[in-house]
Length: 106
Image (cartoon, rainbow, N blue to C red; front, top):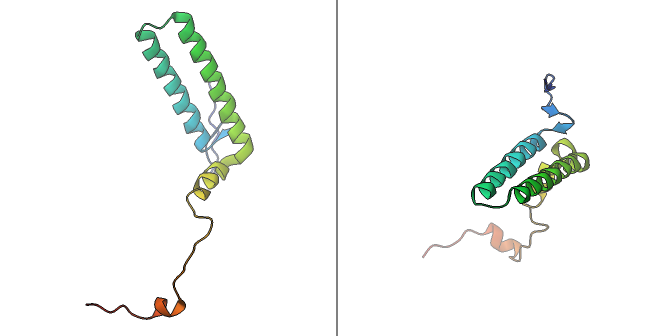
């Protein structure tokens, strides 16, 4: 079975409809689900509980990743995360004269 990773000149990587950072979210999430599955199994949790956890969480991850990809597009998620870093407004309560006069040193 061979999968194509389509990347044209100047285009971001795309795999089965997932673009850009969603590929990393998808791959990292599946790796995290696998590690948690192994840790649960090694800790002595029941086999069917581990399988059910793996199946449900992997399905939720796939659904969420494709939903984010469809909702925000290639760069929309980064723009949304960057928007959270900026304040809504700035308050400057100093007078204009204080802004332009040099400070005196003691």
